[in-house]
Length: 300
Image (cartoon, rainbow, N blue to C red):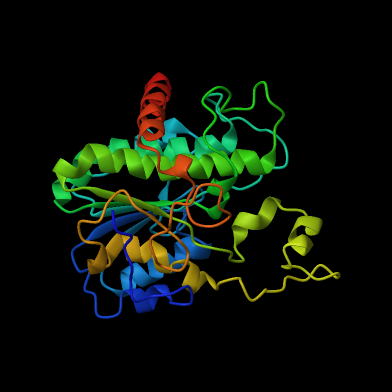
């Protein structure tokens, strides 16, 4: 399969992706759309005319409540939705919790929030996506997916030592696999699904990182002030691939792909430190994870 290219790059903003695109009449859900790249995704989509629902844990104004770590909250959101949905941007997430925490259903909290909650939301709204006729599922993964496959033997660190970054990496591999699984199952319904990594951006996602980690990344000075290395992107640039996959006409009919932060489809290179890991786009792993998640979602 030939890798897909676009005329955009890593410095393109979300608004530039949608320049000249009319999204009037399209209904889009963005999880975690109250801050960071989620907020910029919402702004760009609304700027192009879309009706955007912001789903967040602590809603204000016209936002809607959604706690992805609580499957009851997800079910309530799904039950309250009527009519078609043209795109779901699975943007909300948590990263590198310093100690192991678990959700009410016993899942490790990063995996429960970043993956299982989104899985329950997207599968719960499948009929609404189908009603749209040309709906899109967008999974916000991460370059961290290169660090770990999904561990089917001990996904919740019940036996192996907990590692904040391995746990985060596993959850982002799972997000990429969710897109592969949906693409394999839902093509006949006119639903496409793709995943991407947004790159490095200063957002609330880093709130659990200690100062030494931030300094090692070149993102904080010795006095504790945030600095922006050249390889970092602005939130407006970080949201560009979100809106590319959610709404650009260039992605019509494109499904089951993984995109890098430069707005190009990523290359699958074994053992690479960039691109997409083979385990993040493996159809067999995607099918196994789908069945595992279905069982978990049904049990709680």
